[in-house]
Image 1: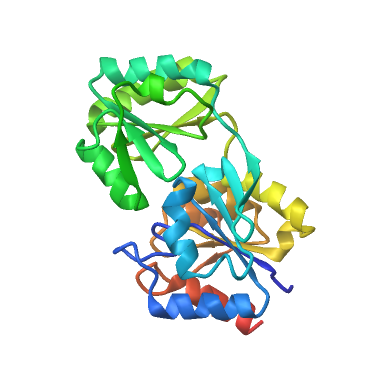
Image 2: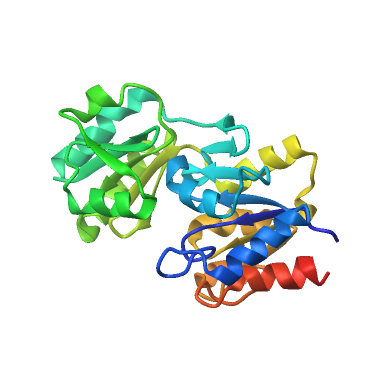
Length: 270
């Protein structure tokens, strides 16, 4: 089988523990694109939180794609056209906001290149800004500022207390949206049915490719669906046990250029 599409999760997969792409992995992925492989960066991050890595890998030049918000948006990075999006209904925002406020948590969302919150100095907001390499705008009132559909909101706070809120919100919102924690201190609030596999099916259809022509690499719970869906599902050796069980192949860790090893084995030496 000649693979034509390489889908990469970011944190814990493409990047090392310093959130960087190593020289070996970068050079390997540039060569893969020279050979005609399309690269898709698929992450729970907002679109502009993926841009620095897309630039490093020259996705604009090689006509790659960004899947952001855990599958909520697909962007053709050459044209910057959003070719698919699934957004939250603004009618849900007051409930989400009240959940955050009554528990003394912070809520944030995104607008273009910025993170929007009521407190830019909050430790969790600062952590989100660091992870995504995005600036934060402090607004007087979150609901007034986010008066348009967004792909995701995020509530952040003390993990033990946040776990209790997660269960409460899951029960209340089970028919309306998905609620899950991406980190112990981050509660993700996204449209119902959003996942990476669903968005990849849309992208494959647009590209005229089959899932058998796709390799997907990941390490976390939100990578499970795409690893199960791909023609070749690859787990990093640092992946969660359930991800390893679902994978067709387990590569080296993100600290050992595991992505480069996959490309060398299944694309260069195929």
